[in-house]
Amino acid sequence: MPPAERTKKPKTTDKSGDKDRVHKLSLKGSSKLVTEFFEYSINTILFQRGVYPAEDFTAIKKYGLNMLVSADDQVKSYIRKIMSQLSKWMLGGKISKLVIVITSKDTGENLERWQFDVQLQGKAAKAKSPPPAATDGSGSTSKENSAPAAAAPVPEKTEKEIQEEIQSLFRQITASVTFLPMLDGRCTFNVLVYADGDAEVPMEWGDSDAREIAGGEKVALRSWGTSSHKVDTLIPTCSTQV
Image (tube, rainbow, N blue to C red):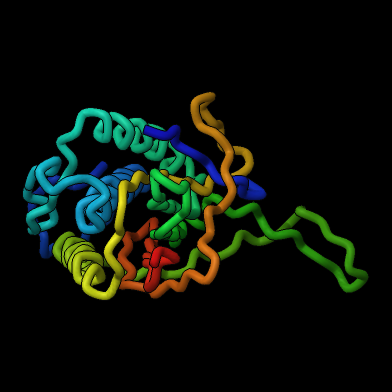
């Protein structure tokens, strides 16, 4: 299993069970939800694209759907290591993108690139943004007496609404295999994480290029989000593989 990689980017949940009540997740709860979503996304893509044999997956119930997750110890360990670090970066607001790259084992060619963009929003975005500098007519700036930026309003959602958004996205991912070409030969995958330049990076994580695919096209799927995060998904519409 290849090492996890970080790209060279110029770097209390309410448990009442009432899913029709407005869901006000804390930043910690939202970060956990997004990290968990990424974990199931990786497993879903590996299964749907046939990166590993179907018999290597087991079905569990999640988001009101039957989700398939890898039962292979090596794959599970690799994904678990990624999620452990990702959860820390998510909580610190250090992540802007997660990318899953499917690669040919025989040629090393990058065949598909699945991209998830993460944006902080609402109070979480305001907390990360530096205070704006006040300016006078001469163009000189000062941080004194500068007013804090107003957080962009984020529509409040119920737990049920958030789950339905995630359900719709996973259904779209599953349906997308109908227009993607078959992946012939042996394949493997890498996970790239776009982290801020000041993010603390474990020694076992290495820098990587963006693994873009020449001539590759992307299509945007449904977005989903919480009061703190918005997740956009871009999937490949073609592969360089013949």
